Structures are given as structure tokens and as C-alpha cells.
Amino acid sequence: MLRSPPSRGQARTARTERMTDTASTLINAFTAYLRDDRRRSQHTVRAYGITAERFCAFLMDHIGGGVGADEIRALKQADIRSYLAYRRGDGLTNNSAARELSALRAFLKFVGGDEAQIPKIKGPKVKRGVPRPASPEDILALAGDAQDSASEDWIGARDWAVLLLLYGSGLRISEALDLTGDALPLSDTLRVTGKRSKVRIVPLLPEVRAAIDHYIDLCPHVMQAGEPIFRGKRGGPLSPNLIRRVVQQARGKLGIADTTTPHALRHSFATHLLAGGADLRSLQELLGHASLSSTQVYTAVDAAHLLDVYQNAHPRAG
Image (cartoon, rainbow, N blue to C red; front, top):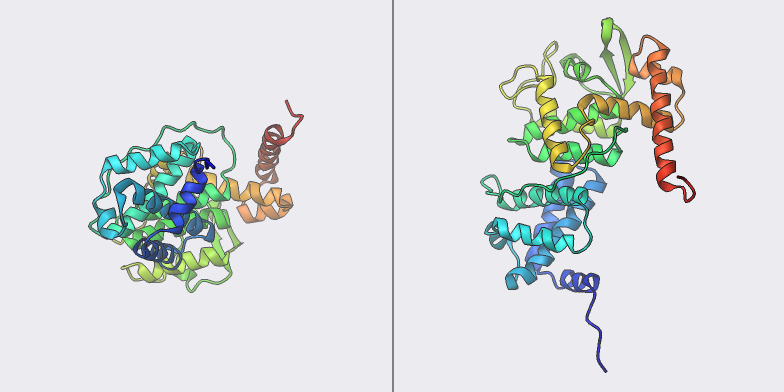
């Protein structure tokens, strides 16, 4: 009796099941590094781990043998292109391909170490989305890519912490970078000085607090009262323009809309809180708006976002 050939999914599962112990050890070490050293979210660790598994399974057929650190370090640009072409056969979109490539770069950098020579691969062209609040997944991917692309671990931890702070507490970038050692040690709230020297108290989520503490542990510059918490490479105050450039580079690689700027993370904070049931007066206090009319802008943004979701999801819309 003739058997039908295995589907792509069945073939991929079979390859994963016979993955070498060496490859599995590398992947486990990679995910542990993301979780423990990089403090990445559970969602990111899982997604990057799946990409690493898929890539190593592909390599077993591609190079015809076991896959270990030496084989991965010896990969050329053509090998990476072959993998991406293979993934295209699974119906991968440009946006998804850009994110998979970002995860792949992180894995190759981990395996290669500090002296890693990662083959240069230009990401696929992506269609820019219409302006809308960035999703939590996009924000974490953006912050994660910024961290992975940093020249030093402490700088990566800094960029991760700053971007999480903008989204997690809704700060203006100037407010985040104006924080000084007087705010240390951190608690579950943060005292922020905003426009016109208006002081407000904002919540500090445990994940954001942990990210800032981790950055402080790695930072080579001493934290002192009156001195900025977030430092540039030489120890001076961190420039807002540097964070803007980091975000610009990351969103280009990930295919995230150009409208996703550092300030847009604050907008996303407000829109997501409003969608979650926050009232305008409370939101006004959290954002430090002098006038409620400034906060009311988010009702229009949220309504537009909900309409967009409706039109894309409702079976009878349009």
C-alpha cells in the first residue's frame, strides 16, 4: 500500500524530535539567557526559543548532519537566506519574517559570543501600518530588539528599562531621563516632575522596577543623589535623541509602524488603560495633563482603534 508523503508540518515535527542533544543544549541555554540575563518576557522567550528550535531542525537537513555551536558559527549568508526561503514556504508574511529574523540574529549572537560575525541579511520590506496604538507585543519586541542590538550588556539593559518605563508608567521621555538617584531605592510608585514642574505619583509595575534594578546592577557608573539614573556611554546624561534612534532602528527591522516613537509608548499606555476601563480623571492624573481636554484626545483614539478592530473582525462589517 502506497503511503502519501509527509506534510511540511509532519516533516518539521520529525526533525524536531530527532534534534541532537547539542542543539537542544544550545537552545535551552539560549532561552535561559533570555529569561535570566536579559529579563525578557515569557512571551518573547517562548517565541525566540521556537525560532531557534525551528532553525536548528532546518539545519539538520540543510547541512546533512548534527548541529552544534561550531556548525552555527560557520554559517554563511546563503544559509540564512535558505532558511528564510524555507519559512516562506510555510506562508510567512513580511512582518512575521522580519520578527523571525530578529529572533534568529539574537540566537546567532548568543551562540557566536562577543566575537560573533553574524551574516548580514537585509530584512524584508514591510507594509507600514496606519497610525494606531502599539500593541504590548510590538512594544516588547521593540524593546527586546533594542536590547539585543546594544554594543554592551549594560547599555542593552538600559534601553530595555527606559522603553518599558515609558510604556509601563506613561512617562514622557524627558521625565524618564530626568529621574535621578534621589528616586532610589525604587518602590511600587515613582515621583515624577513633569511640565511646569508639576509633580505627580505614578505606579511602577514589578516588571519595570526589575528592569531598572537590573540596569543599575550592570551600569558601570555610580548612582548618586542628584545625578541621572539613565546614563550615556561615558557617564553623562542619556540623550533623548539616542533613544529615538534606537527605536527607529528597531522598528525598521521589525516592520513596526513609523508612528511607534518613544512618545507613542506613552500614548499606548493611555489608550490601553482607557480600553481597560480607566476613567478620564484618573488617566489625567497619571499622564500629568493640566487640562482634561488633553486627556479626552484618547477617547477618539480608542474609538478609532475599536472601529478598526470591528471592521477587520466582524463578519458583516464593510
